[in-house]
Length: 448
Image 1 (spheres, rainbow, N blue to C red):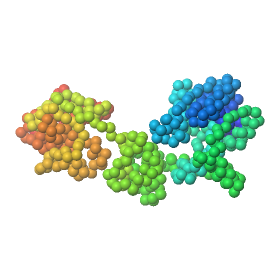
Image 2 (image 1 turned 180 degrees about the horizontal axis):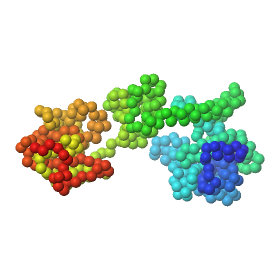
Image 3 (image 1 turned 180 degrees about the vertical axis):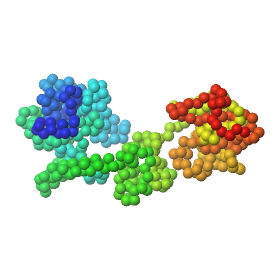
Image 4 (image 1 turned 30 degrees about the vertical axis):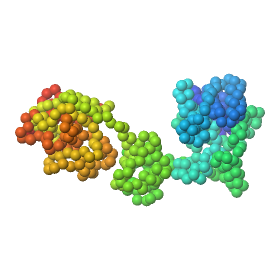
Protein backbone atom coordinates (compact mmCIF):
# COMPACT_ATOMS: atom_id res chain seq x y z
CA UNK A 1 0.00 0.00 0.00
CA UNK A 2 2.87 2.39 0.75
CA UNK A 3 4.14 2.28 -2.84
CA UNK A 4 0.72 3.42 -4.04
CA UNK A 5 0.54 6.19 -1.42
CA UNK A 6 4.13 7.28 -2.08
CA UNK A 7 3.33 7.66 -5.78
CA UNK A 8 0.20 9.65 -4.91
CA UNK A 9 2.19 11.93 -2.59
CA UNK A 10 4.73 12.50 -5.33
CA UNK A 11 2.12 13.14 -8.03
CA UNK A 12 0.45 15.84 -5.94
CA UNK A 13 3.61 17.18 -4.27
CA UNK A 14 2.06 16.74 -0.83
CA UNK A 15 4.98 16.07 1.54
CA UNK A 16 8.63 17.01 1.92
CA UNK A 17 10.91 14.81 4.03
CA UNK A 18 12.61 17.88 5.51
CA UNK A 19 9.42 19.40 6.93
CA UNK A 20 7.40 18.80 10.08
CA UNK A 21 3.76 17.72 9.72
CA UNK A 22 0.86 17.33 12.12
CA UNK A 23 -1.23 14.16 11.86
CA UNK A 24 -4.88 14.33 12.91
CA UNK A 25 -5.26 11.22 15.10
CA UNK A 26 -8.74 10.09 16.15
CA UNK A 27 -7.72 6.54 17.03
CA UNK A 28 -9.76 5.05 14.19
CA UNK A 29 -8.31 2.71 11.58
CA UNK A 30 -7.68 5.44 8.98
CA UNK A 31 -5.75 7.87 11.18
CA UNK A 32 -3.80 5.10 12.91
CA UNK A 33 -2.70 3.73 9.52
CA UNK A 34 -1.67 7.21 8.35
CA UNK A 35 0.43 7.82 11.47
CA UNK A 36 2.07 4.41 11.21
CA UNK A 37 2.90 4.81 7.52
CA UNK A 38 4.44 8.26 7.92
CA UNK A 39 6.48 7.14 10.92
CA UNK A 40 7.72 4.03 9.11
CA UNK A 41 8.82 6.15 6.14
CA UNK A 42 10.81 8.52 8.34
CA UNK A 43 8.64 11.66 8.09
CA UNK A 44 8.86 14.13 10.96
CA UNK A 45 5.41 14.13 12.50
CA UNK A 46 3.54 15.13 15.63
CA UNK A 47 0.04 13.88 16.35
CA UNK A 48 -2.99 15.90 17.44
CA UNK A 49 -6.12 14.50 19.07
CA UNK A 50 -9.39 16.31 19.79
CA UNK A 51 -11.79 15.15 22.50
CA UNK A 52 -15.22 16.60 21.70
CA UNK A 53 -16.90 15.00 24.75
CA UNK A 54 -19.85 13.75 22.70
CA UNK A 55 -19.71 9.99 23.40
CA UNK A 56 -19.12 9.80 27.15
CA UNK A 57 -16.60 7.16 28.23
CA UNK A 58 -15.93 6.24 24.60
CA UNK A 59 -14.46 9.70 23.92
CA UNK A 60 -12.09 9.29 26.85
CA UNK A 61 -11.21 5.75 25.71
CA UNK A 62 -10.17 7.12 22.31
CA UNK A 63 -7.98 9.74 23.96
CA UNK A 64 -6.24 7.14 26.14
CA UNK A 65 -5.65 4.92 23.10
CA UNK A 66 -4.07 7.79 21.13
CA UNK A 67 -1.82 8.69 24.05
CA UNK A 68 -0.64 5.07 24.41
CA UNK A 69 -0.03 4.71 20.66
CA UNK A 70 2.02 7.92 20.47
CA UNK A 71 4.06 6.84 23.48
CA UNK A 72 4.74 3.49 21.79
CA UNK A 73 5.81 5.25 18.55
CA UNK A 74 7.73 7.97 20.41
CA UNK A 75 5.60 10.66 18.72
CA UNK A 76 4.67 13.95 20.39
CA UNK A 77 0.91 14.16 20.99
CA UNK A 78 -1.06 17.41 21.26
CA UNK A 79 -4.44 17.07 22.97
CA UNK A 80 -7.43 19.44 22.95
CA UNK A 81 -10.76 19.26 24.79
CA UNK A 82 -13.94 20.98 23.53
CA UNK A 83 -17.41 21.62 24.92
CA UNK A 84 -18.88 20.93 21.50
CA UNK A 85 -22.58 21.02 22.44
CA UNK A 86 -22.30 24.44 24.05
CA UNK A 87 -20.34 25.76 21.08
CA UNK A 88 -22.95 24.41 18.66
CA UNK A 89 -25.80 26.04 20.60
CA UNK A 90 -23.95 29.34 20.90
CA UNK A 91 -23.15 29.53 17.18
CA UNK A 92 -26.37 27.87 16.00
CA UNK A 93 -24.53 25.02 14.27
CA UNK A 94 -25.17 21.31 13.98
CA UNK A 95 -23.00 19.14 16.22
CA UNK A 96 -21.14 17.86 13.14
CA UNK A 97 -20.39 21.37 11.84
CA UNK A 98 -19.43 22.62 15.31
CA UNK A 99 -16.92 19.78 15.75
CA UNK A 100 -15.51 20.42 12.29
CA UNK A 101 -15.10 24.14 12.93
CA UNK A 102 -13.48 23.58 16.32
CA UNK A 103 -11.17 20.90 14.96
CA UNK A 104 -9.83 22.77 11.95
CA UNK A 105 -9.50 26.08 13.78
CA UNK A 106 -7.40 24.35 16.44
CA UNK A 107 -5.35 22.46 13.84
CA UNK A 108 -4.38 25.65 12.03
CA UNK A 109 -3.49 27.52 15.23
CA UNK A 110 -1.33 24.59 16.37
CA UNK A 111 0.29 24.32 12.94
CA UNK A 112 1.40 27.93 13.18
CA UNK A 113 2.60 27.51 16.77
CA UNK A 114 4.85 24.50 16.04
CA UNK A 115 5.93 25.62 12.57
CA UNK A 116 4.45 22.62 10.75
CA UNK A 117 4.25 22.64 6.95
CA UNK A 118 0.84 21.03 6.89
CA UNK A 119 -1.85 18.99 8.63
CA UNK A 120 -2.25 15.42 7.39
CA UNK A 121 -5.75 13.97 7.64
CA UNK A 122 -6.68 10.38 6.85
CA UNK A 123 -9.45 10.71 4.27
CA UNK A 124 -9.41 7.81 1.80
CA UNK A 125 -11.07 7.11 -1.52
CA UNK A 126 -14.28 5.70 0.04
CA UNK A 127 -14.70 9.02 1.87
CA UNK A 128 -14.37 10.83 -1.46
CA UNK A 129 -17.05 8.67 -3.08
CA UNK A 130 -19.38 9.21 -0.12
CA UNK A 131 -18.82 12.98 -0.41
CA UNK A 132 -19.70 12.93 -4.12
CA UNK A 133 -22.93 11.05 -3.42
CA UNK A 134 -23.83 13.38 -0.55
CA UNK A 135 -23.28 16.46 -2.71
CA UNK A 136 -25.23 14.92 -5.58
CA UNK A 137 -28.24 14.28 -3.34
CA UNK A 138 -28.11 17.79 -1.86
CA UNK A 139 -27.76 19.43 -5.26
CA UNK A 140 -24.37 20.74 -6.29
CA UNK A 141 -22.31 22.24 -9.09
CA UNK A 142 -19.39 20.81 -10.98
CA UNK A 143 -16.96 21.45 -8.13
CA UNK A 144 -19.12 19.48 -5.68
CA UNK A 145 -18.89 16.42 -7.93
CA UNK A 146 -15.09 16.45 -7.97
CA UNK A 147 -14.84 14.69 -4.61
CA UNK A 148 -12.26 15.45 -1.92
CA UNK A 149 -9.12 17.22 -3.08
CA UNK A 150 -5.64 15.97 -2.06
CA UNK A 151 -4.77 19.46 -0.82
CA UNK A 152 -6.88 22.28 0.61
CA UNK A 153 -4.56 25.00 1.82
CA UNK A 154 -2.54 23.43 4.63
CA UNK A 155 -4.83 20.38 4.87
CA UNK A 156 -3.13 17.40 3.19
CA UNK A 157 -4.69 14.04 2.35
CA UNK A 158 -1.95 11.52 1.48
CA UNK A 159 -4.24 8.46 1.63
CA UNK A 160 -6.95 9.47 -0.85
CA UNK A 161 -5.73 6.80 -3.25
CA UNK A 162 -6.27 3.96 -0.74
CA UNK A 163 -9.54 2.19 0.04
CA UNK A 164 -10.94 1.43 3.45
CA UNK A 165 -10.41 -2.29 2.81
CA UNK A 166 -6.73 -1.73 1.98
CA UNK A 167 -6.25 0.29 5.15
CA UNK A 168 -7.83 -2.37 7.35
CA UNK A 169 -5.77 -5.09 5.65
CA UNK A 170 -2.59 -3.08 6.27
CA UNK A 171 -3.40 -2.79 9.99
CA UNK A 172 -4.28 -6.50 10.22
CA UNK A 173 -0.92 -7.46 8.68
CA UNK A 174 0.84 -5.46 11.38
CA UNK A 175 -1.51 -6.68 14.13
CA UNK A 176 -2.11 -3.00 14.96
CA UNK A 177 -5.15 -2.28 17.09
CA UNK A 178 -7.44 0.74 16.62
CA UNK A 179 -10.68 2.03 18.10
CA UNK A 180 -14.10 2.17 16.47
CA UNK A 181 -16.43 5.13 16.82
CA UNK A 182 -19.78 3.50 17.60
CA UNK A 183 -21.68 6.39 16.00
CA UNK A 184 -20.25 5.37 12.62
CA UNK A 185 -22.23 2.13 12.86
CA UNK A 186 -25.62 3.79 13.32
CA UNK A 187 -27.64 4.83 10.26
CA UNK A 188 -28.79 8.17 11.64
CA UNK A 189 -26.42 10.51 9.78
CA UNK A 190 -26.52 10.94 5.99
CA UNK A 191 -22.94 9.80 5.46
CA UNK A 192 -23.54 6.65 7.54
CA UNK A 193 -26.64 5.81 5.48
CA UNK A 194 -24.62 6.17 2.28
CA UNK A 195 -21.79 4.01 3.65
CA UNK A 196 -23.90 1.31 5.29
CA UNK A 197 -26.98 1.16 3.05
CA UNK A 198 -26.66 2.97 -0.30
CA UNK A 199 -23.15 1.89 -1.36
CA UNK A 200 -23.79 -1.84 -0.71
CA UNK A 201 -26.87 -1.61 -2.97
CA UNK A 202 -24.89 0.18 -5.68
CA UNK A 203 -22.12 -2.42 -5.45
CA UNK A 204 -24.67 -5.19 -5.87
CA UNK A 205 -25.71 -3.54 -9.14
CA UNK A 206 -22.14 -2.84 -10.28
CA UNK A 207 -19.20 -4.11 -8.18
CA UNK A 208 -16.95 -1.46 -9.80
CA UNK A 209 -19.17 1.46 -8.77
CA UNK A 210 -16.55 3.01 -6.46
CA UNK A 211 -13.82 2.88 -9.11
CA UNK A 212 -16.21 4.26 -11.73
CA UNK A 213 -17.29 7.18 -9.55
CA UNK A 214 -13.66 7.99 -8.78
CA UNK A 215 -12.80 7.87 -12.48
CA UNK A 216 -15.65 10.28 -13.15
CA UNK A 217 -14.38 12.67 -10.48
CA UNK A 218 -10.97 12.67 -12.18
CA UNK A 219 -12.61 13.65 -15.50
CA UNK A 220 -14.58 16.38 -13.75
CA UNK A 221 -11.45 17.68 -12.02
CA UNK A 222 -9.86 18.09 -15.44
CA UNK A 223 -12.93 19.90 -16.74
CA UNK A 224 -12.99 22.11 -13.66
CA UNK A 225 -9.32 23.04 -14.15
CA UNK A 226 -9.97 24.08 -17.77
CA UNK A 227 -13.06 26.03 -16.75
CA UNK A 228 -11.22 27.77 -13.90
CA UNK A 229 -8.54 28.95 -16.33
CA UNK A 230 -11.18 30.32 -18.70
CA UNK A 231 -13.08 31.99 -15.86
CA UNK A 232 -10.03 33.64 -14.32
CA UNK A 233 -10.53 36.91 -16.17
CA UNK A 234 -14.16 37.59 -15.26
CA UNK A 235 -13.88 36.11 -11.77
CA UNK A 236 -11.03 38.45 -10.82
CA UNK A 237 -13.11 41.58 -11.45
CA UNK A 238 -15.42 43.27 -8.93
CA UNK A 239 -18.01 43.61 -11.71
CA UNK A 240 -19.81 40.79 -13.48
CA UNK A 241 -21.82 41.66 -16.61
CA UNK A 242 -24.35 38.85 -16.49
CA UNK A 243 -26.13 40.12 -19.60
CA UNK A 244 -23.03 39.03 -21.58
CA UNK A 245 -24.02 35.41 -20.97
CA UNK A 246 -27.07 34.70 -23.11
CA UNK A 247 -27.46 31.09 -22.03
CA UNK A 248 -29.29 30.76 -18.72
CA UNK A 249 -27.20 27.79 -17.60
CA UNK A 250 -23.86 29.51 -18.17
CA UNK A 251 -25.19 32.67 -16.52
CA UNK A 252 -26.13 30.74 -13.40
CA UNK A 253 -22.84 28.88 -13.23
CA UNK A 254 -20.63 31.93 -13.79
CA UNK A 255 -22.60 33.97 -11.25
CA UNK A 256 -22.41 31.20 -8.65
CA UNK A 257 -18.63 30.81 -9.03
CA UNK A 258 -18.15 34.59 -8.87
CA UNK A 259 -20.43 35.10 -5.86
CA UNK A 260 -18.95 32.14 -3.96
CA UNK A 261 -15.65 34.04 -3.64
CA UNK A 262 -17.45 36.67 -1.58
CA UNK A 263 -19.24 34.30 0.80
CA UNK A 264 -22.61 33.86 -0.96
CA UNK A 265 -24.20 30.41 -1.20
CA UNK A 266 -26.17 28.83 -4.04
CA UNK A 267 -29.58 29.91 -2.74
CA UNK A 268 -28.45 33.52 -2.43
CA UNK A 269 -26.90 33.38 -5.91
CA UNK A 270 -30.26 32.39 -7.38
CA UNK A 271 -31.98 35.28 -5.55
CA UNK A 272 -29.33 37.76 -6.69
CA UNK A 273 -29.64 36.69 -10.34
CA UNK A 274 -33.39 37.35 -10.35
CA UNK A 275 -33.28 40.54 -8.24
CA UNK A 276 -34.47 43.86 -9.56
CA UNK A 277 -31.99 46.68 -10.18
CA UNK A 278 -30.97 48.49 -7.02
CA UNK A 279 -31.28 45.60 -4.59
CA UNK A 280 -28.31 44.89 -2.31
CA UNK A 281 -27.41 41.53 -0.75
CA UNK A 282 -24.93 41.06 2.09
CA UNK A 283 -22.77 38.01 2.82
CA UNK A 284 -21.46 36.79 6.21
CA UNK A 285 -17.96 37.33 4.79
CA UNK A 286 -18.47 41.12 4.84
CA UNK A 287 -19.29 41.85 1.20
CA UNK A 288 -22.26 43.52 -0.48
CA UNK A 289 -23.48 42.69 -3.99
CA UNK A 290 -25.61 45.11 -5.97
CA UNK A 291 -27.85 44.17 -8.89
CA UNK A 292 -27.45 47.06 -11.34
CA UNK A 293 -28.87 47.05 -14.88
CA UNK A 294 -27.68 43.65 -16.07
CA UNK A 295 -24.53 43.74 -13.91
CA UNK A 296 -23.51 42.56 -10.49
CA UNK A 297 -21.19 44.82 -8.51
CA UNK A 298 -19.39 43.82 -5.30
CA UNK A 299 -17.57 45.77 -2.64
CA UNK A 300 -16.80 45.37 1.08
CA UNK A 301 -19.76 46.18 3.30
CA UNK A 302 -19.82 49.89 4.10
CA UNK A 303 -18.63 50.75 7.58
CA UNK A 304 -20.50 53.48 9.50
CA UNK A 305 -18.87 56.90 9.13
CA UNK A 306 -18.52 59.46 11.88
CA UNK A 307 -19.02 63.01 10.50
CA UNK A 308 -15.82 65.07 10.53
CA UNK A 309 -15.80 68.65 11.78
CA UNK A 310 -13.51 71.17 10.07
CA UNK A 311 -13.11 74.26 12.31
CA UNK A 312 -10.43 76.08 10.31
CA UNK A 313 -8.01 75.91 7.41
CA UNK A 314 -5.59 72.96 7.32
CA UNK A 315 -5.27 69.32 6.30
CA UNK A 316 -7.71 66.74 7.72
CA UNK A 317 -7.80 62.93 7.53
CA UNK A 318 -11.30 61.60 7.06
CA UNK A 319 -10.12 58.01 7.33
CA UNK A 320 -6.98 56.02 6.78
CA UNK A 321 -6.67 57.24 3.21
CA UNK A 322 -9.18 60.03 2.49
CA UNK A 323 -7.89 63.57 3.00
CA UNK A 324 -9.27 67.10 2.86
CA UNK A 325 -7.13 70.24 2.57
CA UNK A 326 -8.50 73.78 3.01
CA UNK A 327 -6.94 77.17 2.42
CA UNK A 328 -7.89 80.66 1.34
CA UNK A 329 -6.31 81.96 -1.84
CA UNK A 330 -6.81 84.38 -4.73
CA UNK A 331 -10.03 83.96 -6.65
CA UNK A 332 -10.11 81.36 -9.40
CA UNK A 333 -12.53 78.70 -10.61
CA UNK A 334 -11.43 75.08 -10.25
CA UNK A 335 -11.95 72.71 -13.15
CA UNK A 336 -10.90 69.70 -11.07
CA UNK A 337 -13.99 67.79 -9.78
CA UNK A 338 -12.06 66.97 -6.59
CA UNK A 339 -11.21 70.62 -5.89
CA UNK A 340 -13.99 73.05 -4.96
CA UNK A 341 -13.51 76.82 -4.94
CA UNK A 342 -16.09 78.60 -2.78
CA UNK A 343 -16.54 82.34 -2.37
CA UNK A 344 -14.80 82.89 0.97
CA UNK A 345 -17.15 85.74 1.85
CA UNK A 346 -20.24 83.53 1.48
CA UNK A 347 -19.19 80.57 3.65
CA UNK A 348 -18.51 80.28 7.34
CA UNK A 349 -16.64 77.80 9.53
CA UNK A 350 -17.09 75.19 10.93
CA UNK A 351 -17.82 72.73 8.13
CA UNK A 352 -19.02 69.15 8.48
CA UNK A 353 -17.97 66.39 6.09
CA UNK A 354 -20.36 63.43 6.06
CA UNK A 355 -22.03 60.99 3.73
CA UNK A 356 -25.08 62.10 1.78
CA UNK A 357 -28.38 61.58 3.60
CA UNK A 358 -31.96 61.14 2.46
CA UNK A 359 -33.51 64.58 1.90
CA UNK A 360 -30.24 66.44 1.26
CA UNK A 361 -30.84 69.34 -1.13
CA UNK A 362 -28.61 71.85 -2.87
CA UNK A 363 -28.72 74.38 -5.72
CA UNK A 364 -26.22 72.89 -8.17
CA UNK A 365 -24.03 75.42 -9.93
CA UNK A 366 -25.56 76.25 -13.31
CA UNK A 367 -29.13 75.45 -12.19
CA UNK A 368 -31.95 77.57 -10.83
CA UNK A 369 -33.75 76.33 -7.76
CA UNK A 370 -32.94 73.53 -5.35
CA UNK A 371 -32.61 69.87 -6.28
CA UNK A 372 -32.56 66.72 -4.21
CA UNK A 373 -29.04 65.35 -4.12
CA UNK A 374 -30.48 61.87 -4.74
CA UNK A 375 -32.01 63.13 -8.02
CA UNK A 376 -28.72 64.71 -9.02
CA UNK A 377 -26.91 61.41 -8.47
CA UNK A 378 -29.61 59.50 -10.39
CA UNK A 379 -29.30 61.92 -13.31
CA UNK A 380 -25.59 61.06 -13.44
CA UNK A 381 -26.48 57.32 -13.47
CA UNK A 382 -24.57 56.65 -10.26
CA UNK A 383 -24.96 53.17 -8.80
CA UNK A 384 -26.36 52.64 -5.33
CA UNK A 385 -22.83 51.87 -4.15
CA UNK A 386 -21.65 55.25 -5.47
CA UNK A 387 -24.62 57.02 -3.91
CA UNK A 388 -24.11 55.55 -0.47
CA UNK A 389 -20.42 56.54 -0.50
CA UNK A 390 -21.11 60.08 -1.71
CA UNK A 391 -19.53 62.72 0.54
CA UNK A 392 -20.96 66.19 1.13
CA UNK A 393 -19.57 69.31 2.79
CA UNK A 394 -22.09 71.15 4.98
CA UNK A 395 -21.49 74.70 6.22
CA UNK A 396 -22.27 76.30 9.58
CA UNK A 397 -25.87 77.00 8.45
CA UNK A 398 -26.45 73.33 7.61
CA UNK A 399 -26.43 73.87 3.83
CA UNK A 400 -24.76 71.43 1.45
CA UNK A 401 -22.12 73.64 -0.21
CA UNK A 402 -20.28 70.87 -2.07
CA UNK A 403 -21.28 67.40 -3.22
CA UNK A 404 -17.70 66.13 -3.39
CA UNK A 405 -16.67 65.37 -6.95
CA UNK A 406 -20.05 66.44 -8.36
CA UNK A 407 -21.17 70.04 -7.94
CA UNK A 408 -20.66 73.20 -5.89
CA UNK A 409 -23.75 74.98 -4.60
CA UNK A 410 -24.55 77.99 -6.77
CA UNK A 411 -25.16 80.20 -3.72
CA UNK A 412 -21.50 79.99 -2.67
CA UNK A 413 -19.93 79.65 -6.13
CA UNK A 414 -17.28 82.04 -7.45
CA UNK A 415 -18.60 85.13 -9.27
CA UNK A 416 -16.83 88.04 -11.02
CA UNK A 417 -17.12 89.90 -7.73
CA UNK A 418 -15.30 87.22 -5.69
CA UNK A 419 -12.07 88.54 -4.19
CA UNK A 420 -10.94 85.41 -2.34
CA UNK A 421 -11.85 81.74 -2.44
CA UNK A 422 -11.85 78.97 0.14
CA UNK A 423 -10.27 76.07 -1.66
CA UNK A 424 -11.37 72.54 -0.72
CA UNK A 425 -9.25 69.63 -1.98
CA UNK A 426 -10.27 66.00 -1.66
CA UNK A 427 -7.55 63.43 -2.34
CA UNK A 428 -6.27 60.01 -1.39
CA UNK A 429 -3.18 59.93 0.77
CA UNK A 430 -1.57 56.98 -1.02
CA UNK A 431 -1.93 58.37 -4.54
CA UNK A 432 -1.15 62.07 -4.27
CA UNK A 433 0.14 64.81 -2.05
CA UNK A 434 -1.03 68.35 -1.53
CA UNK A 435 0.78 71.63 -1.02
CA UNK A 436 -0.96 74.65 0.42
CA UNK A 437 1.97 76.90 1.24
CA UNK A 438 1.69 79.40 -1.60
CA UNK A 439 -0.64 80.64 -4.33
CA UNK A 440 1.67 79.31 -7.06
CA UNK A 441 0.76 75.74 -6.02
CA UNK A 442 -2.95 76.11 -6.61
CA UNK A 443 -4.62 74.02 -9.37
CA UNK A 444 -4.70 75.74 -12.71
CA UNK A 445 -8.13 77.14 -13.57
CA UNK A 446 -9.90 80.18 -14.85
CA UNK A 447 -9.07 83.22 -12.74
CA UNK A 448 -11.87 85.71 -12.14
